[in-house]
Amino acid sequence: MASIAATDEPVPAAPYLFHRHALAVRVTHWINALAIVFLIGTGLNIFNAHPSLYWGKYGANSDSERRWLEIGATGGTQPQGFVRISGITIRTTGVLGVSTGADGRPQAIPYPSWATFPSYRDLATARNFHFFFAWLLILNGLLYLGYSLASGHLRRDLLPRLAELSPRNIGHDIVQHARLKFPRGEDAKRYHILQKLAYVGVVVVLVPGIILTGLTMSPAMNAAWPWLLDLFGGRQSARSFHWIIANFIVLFTVVHLLMVVLAGPYNEIRSMITGKFRVDPEVAK
Image 1 (tube, rainbow, N blue to C red):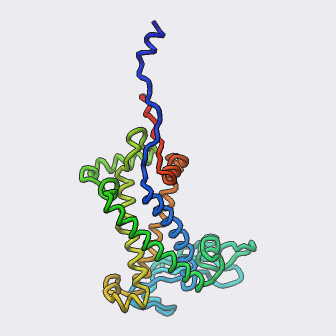
Image 2: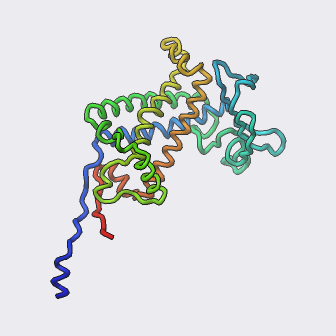
Image 3: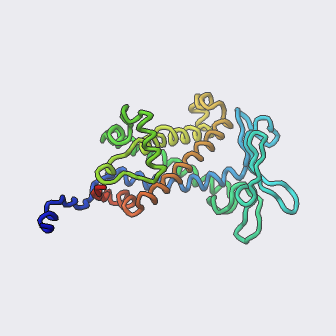
């Protein structure tokens, strides 16, 4: 009787591979990843040449009234790193302002050399690489956007439906992520509301924003499109917005990588390389 009863129990379905990401999505994703890594590294090197940010049309060392952010170091035999935001000073020795150099000695530099490209101070090289990868990001982004619109990927997979935007649904997704409980089985085949909001925010807000603010800092673009200066309130304000948006992109990247690790890096990375995502049957509890 025991053996007969066992045969009546439902047999779990076997795991299978699901085609999750199209080739165009995968290629543009990795090109974007490469471009962003170099843009951040070169951008930090460029920032180190003048580690202050201002609001308005003008900004220089003497414009303390317009300066709202400064990363630097105090003088003396033992300099101390600091970040000054609107008059509030935060000591950041060892991280920003003063960090350990390749020779093991403290060095007074806004962003540490390990985070910049090149790792040494070279504004010309950093600017050349920054412009190259900026245009790569723009062209690649246009290809991704064109494909997403033509194929329906943006509407079908990324744009949230009205019902998904309910506070209850968003709150539920936040709680599930906080408890590190990620979708399993058939539920893992689609993006959920937090993923959709994050991806749409990057595609529709952050990337266009960092491109437009970058163009606003170009004198040639100021001559061709003077409305950009009016849109962002001047070239120095555009630089400030550029820095703020870049930090949001870094934050998104860190959280994105953390979620990949927690959700299962092998399956997640494989799906972005081959397009195939393994779907495991949910185990009844």
